[in-house]
Image (cartoon, rainbow, N blue to C red; front, side, top):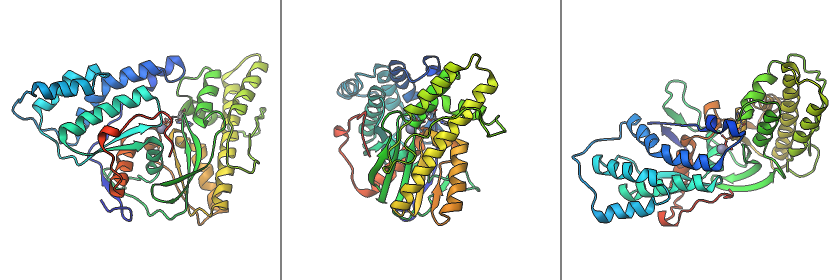
Length: 372
Ligand code: KG4
Ligand code: ZN
């Protein structure tokens, strides 16, 4: 509701199924497993969401015609797990009161993206509603604005965003600074030249035998360090460079060398390294973002992506902005909406639908490196 000026949402359902624990033993996302699990879970998860929203109504069983069945079989040919239960769902339930379906089109792992897209295409055809391809990173930007009302966890009224707005996107695959002159208009002004910041957290965690995803574990042990005068010192790559690019592979390598020189990696030493690593990353992110905000006269800073759940990064941004640019507004996602979720994709889809740029479902494809 409310267009671009007073957008608000009511959450009817929000379901999430994380695969993170399954990939833990590989120390990162294992592509085949990701695709397979995605294809196994997507329909049951969708049914759960429809039930939570009270939108799933049974009807008298009406089998699909052979023609309809073969249409879905072809569309879902690469997702054979879905075909039978999907046909069952259609023959037993009424069309729910849904106006459109938003689906992630990229960036990400293409085989996994295709599962979502093909499934969404099948639903969009069956229910005769539009399909909205959403950029995953746009979802993370919108997530920073989805603060639930204190009085009701289901109601969201988006705050007013003044432009230009600067978005810092920090996730497992991305680290970028994006300038927005208005809604849906993006200009990338800087990005990482090597590892994404979340990737650096994950790799450093792995070097210290901490589970995947590493970010929350690094953060947890770093918190146990009370005295900030660290024995270890890590670089702050590109902190003074004139551009707005980042580089995190140097810090990662510096951690590797630090660890090699230590005869025994005790929990205390691990915590100190984690603490220094988190400090180094935070300083670089905050310093460059604030400098970009100053240069482009940003009225608002939006932070999104899995790494924005990090408490030190959140608190340092709040503190530094208050001290240095008290007029600049800061928006951070609530911690549950920092990592990947469907709510942000639905909200970004809403903005796309009111912008009137609706693509024909047939032309929607998965794009691994889709940019904003
Ligand atoms: O956005 P996201 O859920 O997935 C991608 O789109 O990549 O981000 C996942 C990344 C992982 O690298 C994970 O280690 C990191 O976010 N992450 C964190 C924290 N929570 C998740 N990094 C630092 N501190 C955290 N508390
Ligand atoms: Zn993400």
